[in-house]
Length: 70
Image (cartoon, rainbow, N blue to C red; front, side, top):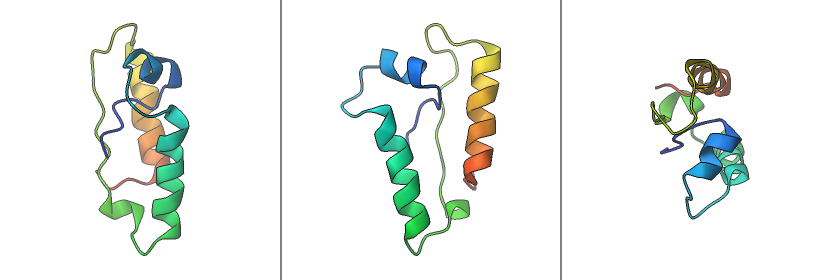
């Protein structure tokens, strides 16, 4: 999944064609399916405008908390 960031403010700066809540809905749908989150990769971007090391680390932690395999 090309999530880019799990920080809603950073995500909103990207101007994607979907909303932050859609990311979490997708995670919920994966959890409700036959797929396991350990079969899912979440892509994050480092160096977004206004992103700090702390906010990037929080995105990484949230990715781990979600249970993504990569």
